Length: 297
Image 1 (cartoon, rainbow, N blue to C red):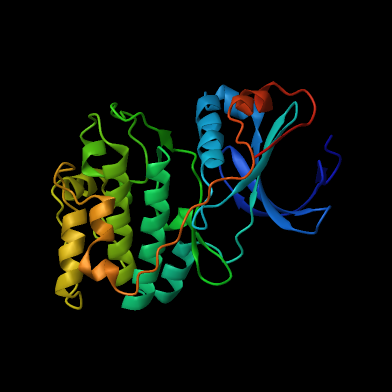
Image 2: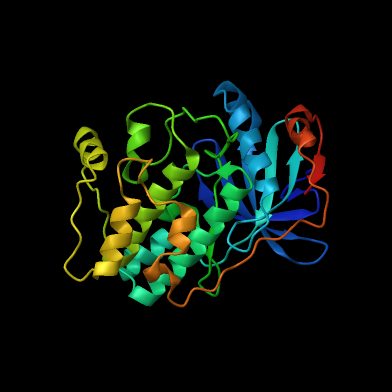
């Protein structure tokens, strides 16, 4: 049971992030001194806002993923009033912070981060998980500057033959097919977001940046952007293939992996097969708990 500043074996510390329905606290595992990040959600608010399915989907998605470029979930703890998601702590902060400080990155630094992003997203898709909210705020950097994808709150577990229909994501990174409010493929939508991020890494600004939402969506739908003069031909070619408003013509992740510019200094990172049994059936239990209910990965 949680007491005071403890929940289970974890000693809670300072708040490192906060949203409408959740806050993230730094904590320490009292058994080995390991730092962790704990996402704390108010169960009543989640239920009142009809977000139970979304939270369960986030937990399911993260349990399926074990990759160096993805924030790892360790366990889920349910109490009468709270849901605690215990996750890997990433010390380097958000990619968004680095971009706001450094403006644009060097070509080699941008390519290295893009390598890691594409590797991790490709792994997600191969596991049937589509993030749907890729943006620099959801990309964390560890102490060595390596990228880790976080926040799978809007993710989808898509069946092979079905299309997704929920419009979600952040306006500046959203794919045109989501704006059209029709069925879409999660893979193509994530690829578009990766293209926006690549443009931002290389230029220091967004390709589509209108404060008026209608004008923003018009530009996105028409892929109306202008590359800065310092972009090389190979950079412009790759970005144009990613930011193709027609998802059927848009470059795929396997094709990005074979791109000439992408291939420079590329060292693939591999996902792992989890040694522990992944239990997906226990996701409901966190919502049903009256006292502490611990579910390990």
